[in-house]
Image (cartoon, rainbow, N blue to C red; front, side):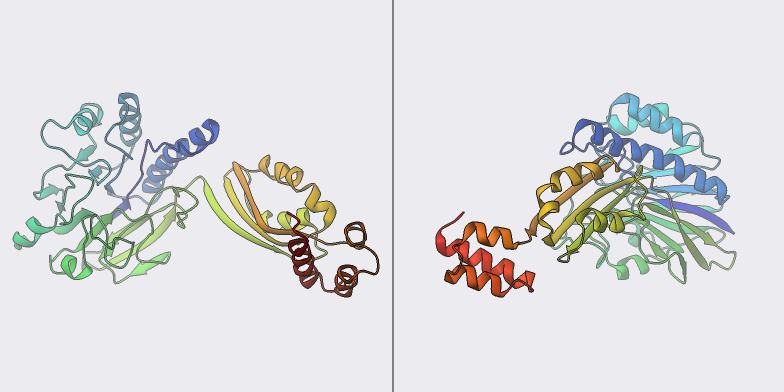
Length: 368
């Protein structure tokens, strides 16, 4: 039996330039912290290999100190580490500065595969499909398709980076687009794919599959719906495959929606929605709609600041939140006995309709 920890799309060195400096540093550091979790998972699960299926780095322009730091972390692994260049950290050839420096600092247990040729490690023959540019309308499977002989006595494992048909959006097929059929025709015992940040297949325990895309080890941002995880994949002596998903992320990005009903406390409902979240590891975007009590509406920025202090980051988007219309507001803004006054008071027990009527009255009067 062979046990492999499959990871991908670590994007070490990613800069969150659209965030404040402190939060940007926290998000970037989380990717390093999660790398430590990957190595711990490999040790806990007694893995024979760690395979990183592309985009170890977020860019080809990586500071020397960061390369050295990453190599140092990988060097603590109890098992061999195999790295495939992806489309973000693609390989440019023999004079490649990024991977040249990486090799200078890499420990003896770490191998970067930069040639489209079989690489034998123990009882496994790896078939790397190396990215040589950020974009490509052709995938890199061609040499594997041409090299169809599979020597007995080895497990044959393909490594590739690019869009897997049906898994992520790539309508122009510019990211090394691959189909499941192409991969299956190559005669591999296992394919490990990188590029898409969503784990594939879905599930925590998976059997009967031979194509795996582990996703990212640390959720990337609010648009990424993963949790940050890797696969631990076992290949038995009978070549049957079983996989388990292991969580490795240290930060979680949450997109929450609150539809406030009339009479509900804004703060209390926000607390209910976030009560299960760990403030030290959660970054939250909350979409708030509905009708807020007049007092809550007036102090909503103060309430939001309280939540900003509880989480790594908190954003409230309340363009669809309305302020309740009170009797005092109606009397202050319309003449008692007027058509507007009577109309608005008629809907006093139906706050949603009242808010709509109030807005129509304001528009008719030319109020802003």
